[in-house]
Image 1 (cartoon, rainbow, N blue to C red):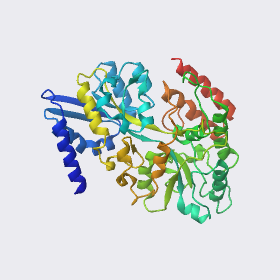
Image 2: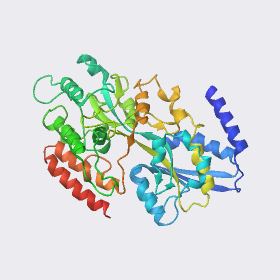
Image 3: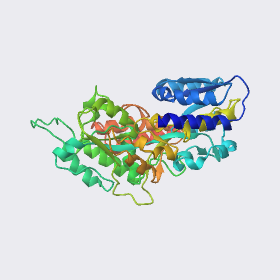
Image 4: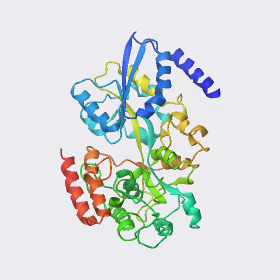
Length: 425
């Protein structure tokens, strides 16, 4: 009842302060998260109620269909008024002239209320081309029951790579000694969310200073070497080829590995797959030995809402974005490990969900208070090999290394050559 009352007050306030729009305006909104759009429907209805004559036409597609469809709409000059925008794509969409510059509307957005680093991702070439709705980043998932059985303390923010490796060995269990562990200490694939947090927490970078070329620094190579050794030398993580038939996001929740690094959004999948089978928590990725306070970065990025450059309703579209991202939203509208970009929402007990696993979601908020880095650039999705393990670019090359088919040096040369050809397009 309290939530409904608060919602009613917010709605009434919005109605009293909303400007008058032309009658019978249809605002087109496209999302790449169908589940999220279902949760957003009450907020969309509230916006329509507060703005008589405005109809929001909402559509959601899974990401594999969203970007091709959005690109086709851009080519035909019929982009939606408001669209979800990824941190990994925003630079190329801005360069293509597809997104409206929202700078002139900035004073109405209360940008100080948002996580600053999330807003900064949308500041490109002196303009503001999106507003963050939520952000997320990789965390270290760990099986608390497995740690307890091994007599280990849970990971903390002070963990080193040495602490992590020692735990991984003790958590790797081969009951019959046949060389095929019944449970691995760790699980890793070549995907960005599983590897790049280690790189950036070690002061590593793939790109040069102006993000125009791939030039991995020694700290990046050191981090990739550490991850390679976990599989090839230390034998505490399985080669990706041995996990064929199992989704990478299910290896940890199925109990096949006691630790795993991946995006905080996987909290939702963990809850579904694990249920009550075991207790689990999250921690920060351990700080690397080569990092300094000046070079270490936490890896995180926002999902944003942008306005199409061809929209004839940019002021109304910006008002809709404000409504969909600011403090009037319920914390329950942000699933699992998706952190509301509007800080006041993220700080509510409602978002922390202490009655569910993991019981320490405040770890994610602590990550957001650090120096953050997205690692994104123009054509990032191509050179990084965005998507599932086994794709081209960095993803596929690292999996070749983890599978013992290539040396790390060979793989780095290959993805650097390929990546730089992509960046020159």
